[in-house]
Image (tube, rainbow, N blue to C red; front, side, top):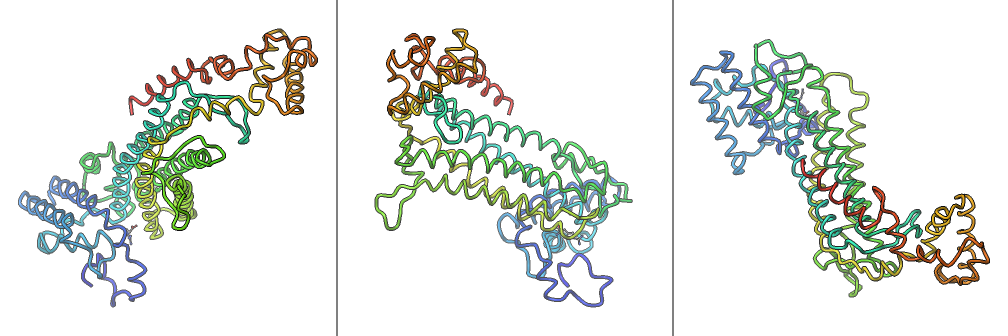
Length: 461
Ligand code: ARG
């Protein structure tokens, strides 16, 4: 059974059905580079312990170099007889180093600690790519916010007009959410920086190997303190998957708004031609497919997470073969995000905002009613009363099908003597915006400070 890593105790080879079920090379061979890096580090600790002499180490490392070059060039690929990436690479190593030398490398390690380590290496590399994509999306939001520092838009709750806000304030709200996702990736990496290599099958190794040296060579900050945990834990994978799903959900929420903004009814944005699609039958169509795919793929990322958690639920310690199922959802999550993030950031960066239309709608739908109530409070009226009076003003305006600023002085004073014409100072969009100037508010001055703070928090990342 060429390419098998076990067989001695079996009288016959595996049934075809088992071999087919067991096989994982079609997805795990993408970890080959990491497995070879692990093999180099492992060869060095075997040498340090005296299990490989100088010439053997040199021979092993050069065979691994050749193997890596052949993997990268495509000259070496998994054979039908290979069960997984580890078996395939051992076959490749034996062919290059010779059976006697190549057969020494497996001492003191197991596929269980290997695969747990490879997964972490893969995710740590891709966390950096995904993080750069998230950063690019934050930057696109910041650039649009900076390009529109004083553009009002309708702020909504329940999707109903609520209070006017600045477009820049709204865009930066999405940027803060993505900043937290970025911070989560950075924080996750501290937990991912522990190497399971050296945990063996589950109990560690009797060969006096040094897991800490392997860990450092592979870019980890420490080796696992518990070999059972080292081989069995997948919480770090699940956490990465959760962060991926959260990034997907955050992109989906931005996307849902862009889809709405691009409707004829809203008319807030025009999508760039390079980031929209057409219809095969309706010649006029210009569709927000990037945003829709982002919204759709967030469901897929959530599926990756729930699938992984379901695989882990109920698994006893330590390694169980179920864990082979951990890789595809993770690969899918990074592939999905690495595809999605450049498209979403490009779509955001090229949006054209129709700021006149947004400004025109910003105060409408009685969005300044809270300003009337708060103006009354500043005149000494208790808020309970002020809320009622402002509500009456809305009722009168609605009955006449006009906006609050269209009410006559007589109508205002008819509601309450306290509603003097001076209230008109807050009955404008910028009267409302400018008054919300404390930290976190939507006044242009507060948004400028917010932007500085956001950049400050981004700078260490
Ligand atoms: N291919 C397996 C995985 O991806 C690793 C091999 C462990 N197999 C075993 N029989 N202990 O999880």
